[in-house]
Length: 138
Image (tube, rainbow, N blue to C red):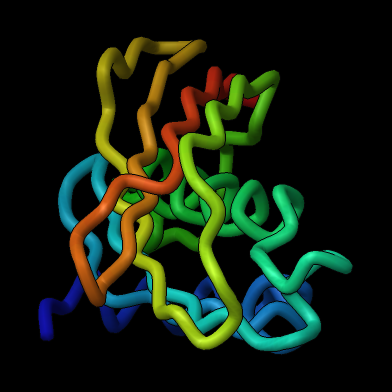
């Protein structure tokens, strides 16, 4: 495990909603990229028994926050936050599935950035959702 991944886990442990309540795990962090995983439980699913869009969005939003702030983890000053996002849900995913969110910068400027997160099933590699997030430096 990289030092950046270890530091991200320490810093983002304070995000209790994503880490504790939702159960997202930080798998890896690099320069302006991150990978997070989530095993879908009943609490993440809608009445049809498939992942709620909000659970998948939370995973993507958290991955984008980590990726965007990956270069300011040492001072623990998280300057980048979401400005807006567009989510494309491509296929339903059932409870019990472990999903992986891989987030990478499409453009990282001085005051705004655009990141893309691809969420896929770890079981079959199928793409479940694509989320594009505009981040702003505050």
